[in-house]
Image (cartoon, rainbow, N blue to C red; front, side, top):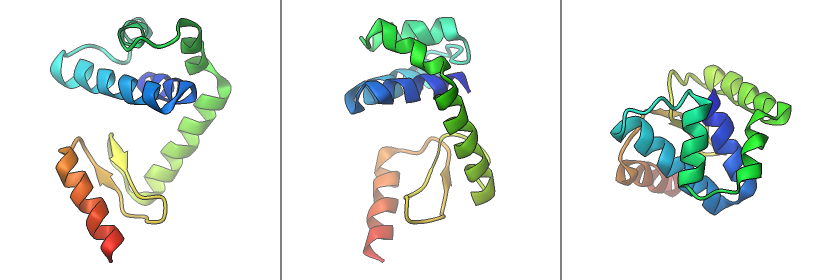
Length: 114
């Protein structure tokens, strides 16, 4: 849950802040084998992404925790079994796992064409 909390806190800063945090989370976990469940590591990643120091505390807000819990319940109902998981807002098909961006773009383009 902690990485999700921090990603959502970054999204509340700006879309660009979320994008930078997302990249840092993926690199830290998949390329650097860092423990992204640790708030100490997450604070370091936050700083590395050059995000506003005080905004990090939003990650601990009750609002963000409730949002994550609601999204988790929805994901379970849709059959998601892991993270990352994504779906289009108007579709109940879920893609689970870290896939190449080209694959995700192809899925989106094809589903929009139907």
